[in-house]
Length: 408
Ligand SMILES: Nc1nc2c(ncn2[C@@H]2O[C@H](COP(=O)(O)OP(=O)(O)OP(=O)(O)O)[C@@H](O)[C@H]2O)c(=O)[nH]1
Image (cartoon, rainbow, N blue to C red; front, side, top):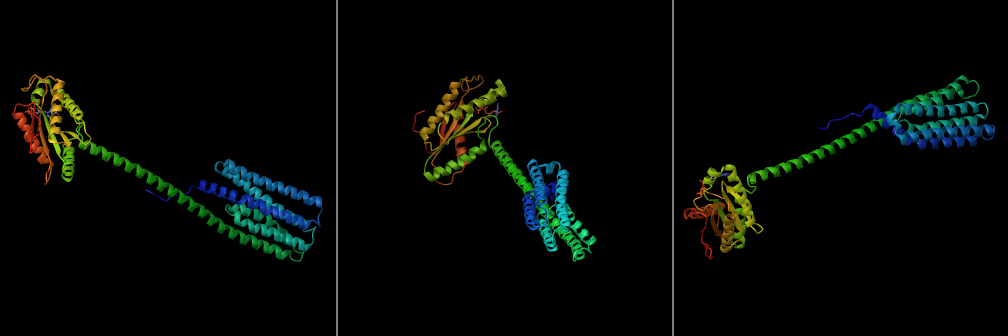
């Protein structure tokens, strides 16, 4: 049964980390690099060039380290095995980056013209706003950056409100900006998380559906095999491995119809062991079974053409269906069978026909025109067999209109 599975908390957390690093790595480095370039361009005329370059170099090293840390985590998949460690390092990196921007702002406030200082603040705010898009997958990651970058500037501005004309306004504005971004970030974070959860559930459900489909396919195959085995069991005689009465009836029906359409012949030999009861009584039932198995082999050898059907009709009676066989040809086959059985020379001391196993056969050949049922054909062969028995056994009797022209 398919049931709604919930993504485990650890798996959800790892997926969030993976997504953050995949999406955030390039974006973080690019955004801050642009910020560094803009800062150099703005502060160049006002600050000591050595200080600026040292700061830029240190910042670039920090960005490089953060990028390497993300690459390592993605390649080694440590966000799966040590999610908490990766999480803490990411947050520390974001906070350090934010703190650098705040530090530069506070430092620059005393060294650059006020318009340049506010332009720089605008740059920091733009970088922060852009970061929302790729960093809220882990809410705390963005908040760490936000509070490290904006919060100190806000409080510094409030604490120095008398020093510059807009400091009070800027301090309050930045606090409001932080509050708004926290709310926005929380909303985005939730919808990102829901997206990951839904995606996971959809994938697990489709995986489960695929598993169910596969197992149904297997079951179907097993059922088909079982049905085939059952059909075989229902059609095969256990002792001799030949087809049984069911097979005879079906094959006869088909051959009669085919012969009716083509105007051809169908011949049928019904064969019965002579004095088989006596054989069983003398040699035992297991020995009788062996005789029946031997006869089955001989009949299969005697049926040389494709389409001929050998079957055990019941007890010690066998059937050989000869599609297309004309009377003479059918009689030749019956004679060959008779000789083959005698040639086996299976001793039968209590037979009234010979001192070896012999068989009697009833042969019928028809060229079906009207309605002819398999049972009628069997019945005619049975009457012929009866005649053969009556006439002394170990012989062939022929029924029907088509008497063979051969001399017996
Ligand atoms: N060993 C063995 N004997 C079987 C099997 N099926 C039937 N028989 C025996 O075949 C014998 C058939 O006996 P009857 O129908 O009296 O015929 P018969 O003794 O062969 O005499 P005729 O057919 O008149 O020559 C019976 O004794 C059955 O028990 C079988 O599967 N194995």
